[in-house]
Length: 404
Image 1 (tube, rainbow, N blue to C red):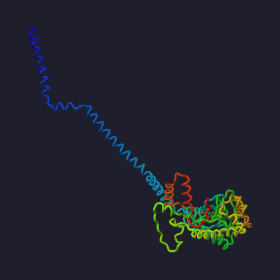
Image 2 (cartoon, one colour; image 1 turned 60 degrees about the vertical axis):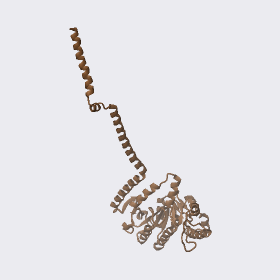
Image 3 (cartoon, rainbow, N blue to C red; image 1 turned 90 degrees about the horizontal axis):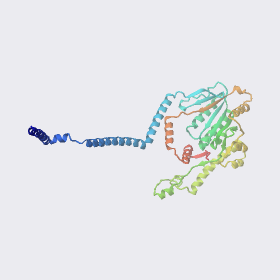
């Protein structure tokens, strides 16, 4: 029994071992390989794929960000351009509101006249006798954002033709400007006085210097604010820039063909010779003689006294009063009241109006673009910014201009 049981056990155990060996030997290699792919390999492959995808997204995002950084100026300009365009469209849409004659300030009428093409002049349509206040502000030249020579001359003519106009008060706040325009305004005011026999007074604002003072000499009486800067009786021409040595240093050749030995004088590729300096000095001296002669005639001063104080410097209101360049120091309202009582003693003050003739030029689309351009050119260096601003504001040519 025991032997049989042992044999049986052996028989049972042996087939099991043979089956295990047979099974392992008979399993196809493809099946083994299919079910034996190592998990770590899959995990590594997935990590590499994820890293590649993340890196690709970062590179694309970085590329987009760097483009905006490199072209930030262009993006800002486009935004400003769109804003300016919207403002221009709004301005055109509201262009019919050319002036408003119903604005009151301190019980005085202010006539605001905008673009000349839209101007159906209100001067001459008043129903009561009045003194006209004509504002002369900004740099005196043909036209800029604050000054318009043709409009001012036309306004003087309109006032001259209006019988209800009884006089003219000039409100001057200007550093001066070109000789031609300053003299043209001066002569137009003299013609107004001669033709109408009406009084012309002047009130100086924060600055009435050089060409601004020149125009003020057309007035019968000059009042100034106590903080006014005035005077600056002198003439400028230039600057004349000579770049010939710089051209020679860097081998730059520039040829100008001319007929007449002085035709190219003051050009930057031509040195300023003694003859050139003498020619230009004679022009400046002649303009200076004209200026000082007008001051002497207007202020009833001897010419030699005017020349002593006319060295180009500016004067405070007190200094100008001491040198007889102005008649008194007072407020704007006081100057108007004094004009009424002095020039119209027989007319009640309440019976004569004061109408301020003022042109307020609306900014055009091109003006907005110019402002945007200037903001891009603004220098972080304050000294350079001041120099750029001064050159941009200063007119060119022969000047009665105050320059600090």
